[in-house]
Length: 163
Image (cartoon, rainbow, N blue to C red; front, side, top):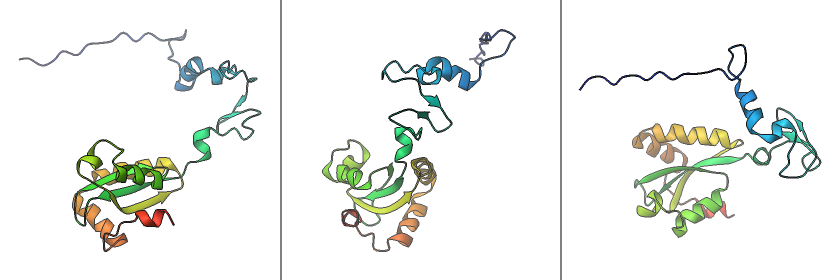
């Protein structure tokens, strides 16, 4: 079999003058909030700022996601030196409770992971998501060492969340 042939795609510029629209310009066409006519809510148009849209209901211009950005990374196990699962959440108590009750289908339910043994808190959920991605790339031995440094006895931290 020969090498796959590369298809060439015809990219026609959307604007006259041969320039493609910027991402912001493309978003402006798709998202009515950028046009200032939020017909879905019936509110008068709001001022678009770098932080969001200012309106009567949202004078600071913050998006609802921006108002509560805290989050964190956690590691669950079934026993000391057992199977490890790394996750991220904005509500530790609720998420760990879901794992303990078996409400989350998948890896944690399949392997009976009910003990949170490591937690990191972050002021911004985006930092927590990035940290989770980084932790998932580390070896199991590195994660076990991280847990031992923070929680030498692999103690179940669930009770600490509810106090």
